[in-house]
Length: 316
Image 1: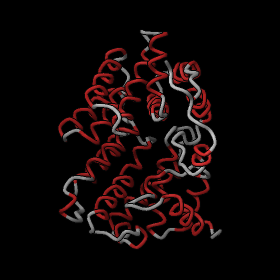
Image 2: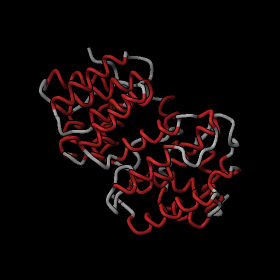
Image 3: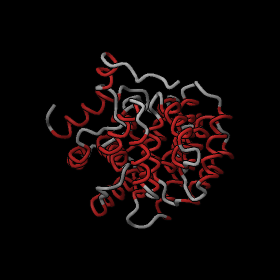
């Protein structure tokens, strides 16, 4: 029997204080609401329309998979349509999310990802799900191999590159600051390999923030990122300028995860002390902040975002 929909009332009030992973994707928000009520047909329509827009497909499936009852509804869908690659992919990523919450065994999530990948060999999304899992529990060799599977199917996969940067940034945390750390090399390489209009150009900024998260957690940087010199060195300034200049020239209004990049860029500009540039980014972000990097290293992201935005816009 299918599980009941989540309770209303107190949980709904709590949701107002939670960052929305759907960002500004109204179609995704509507399908997710339908799924929460057990109506998976809206998700079927959404994913069919998404087609092979791999970044958007990965974003939508990941957000849907985070719903607490998604695995149950995906199983219902598979019972109705046993050959549905979309249903198998949704179930696979839902099991990954359950595994990351400690409610599923990694072996079952891995098996589901493999089954979905076999149904749609050209789709990077099942491999993205596996990368989300291995980023947390796998060894370095498995993480790299899984990332390469994603990249072989979509060389500029936005989410996969972010996951890889986050994992690489955690290597040699106890060694302290290192301007030659491999995460910087990886991000620079990826940005250089990508086409000129690719949002992967912002990846070096993401790498800088992820490395700060690791160094601050290890006690090498202050807990307040704005008090850190991490963003004010010559190399850091070059990275920030290149990424901001890219945004001015190539801003992608339609990319499903552009707001993730905008939050990383705004955070970097705040830490760099470039208030006017930060303000331009906050105007674009609007009501769509993301937890990372405002939570770095261990902060409440809501007040951190609001305080930074108010300072930049002069509304505090």
